[in-house]
Amino acid sequence: MPGEQGDLLAGERAGLRGADLARDALRAAREATARRADERAEEARPKLRVVSGKGRRRRWSGSGPDDRDPQPFGRVVSRVSMDRGWSSRLTDATVLGRWPQLVGPDVADHCIPVSLRDGELTLQAESTAWATQLRTLQRQLLTRLSAAVGPDVVRRIRVVGPSGPSWRHGPRHVRGRGPRDTYG
Image (cartoon, rainbow, N blue to C red; front, side, top):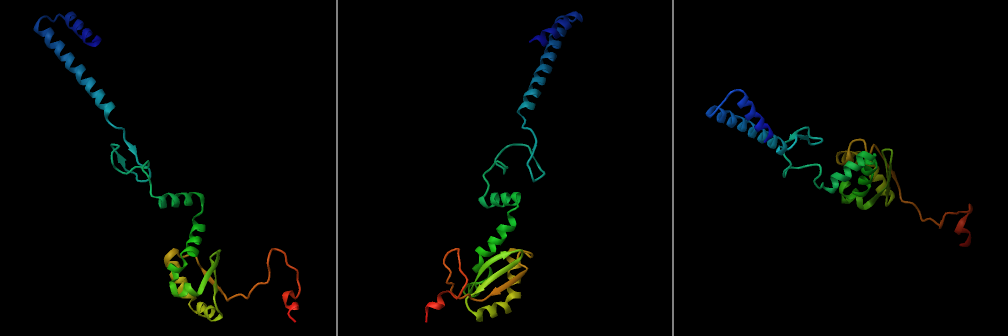
């Protein structure tokens, strides 16, 4: 090696001869080997990196959890919905989609949720008797819903009774008596 030859020449210039020169060459070779071993160990040592969100450092890339690992679908969907601001709409859809589980089968059999806008849930009852019953159960329903989906998702419940049959078919309508004038 060039560094070792330089050390030998320096030893000869210093006036070392025989055994002293051999000891000096051996010392220089050991130091060079130790330096190379340290360099190789430094290259082989994995770099420290911060795993995002956890704030702890990992010293190896092994079988531990990592951001590059496959994630459960629900976690990915919730992260995307939070990033894009869809969480309020998804919560509204949760109330409408899971209605029987949220309020129980007895209530769900006799009313359907029509809409949820600005914290007001509109329910359509199957009969006027059930509309009255739902108005009396309103406070309990609000308590159940706030426990299941969050406190400010549903703030008011508006109950409407059953609607009569509609004679309208299509988007256009002409005012007047309608089909009743043909019955008589």
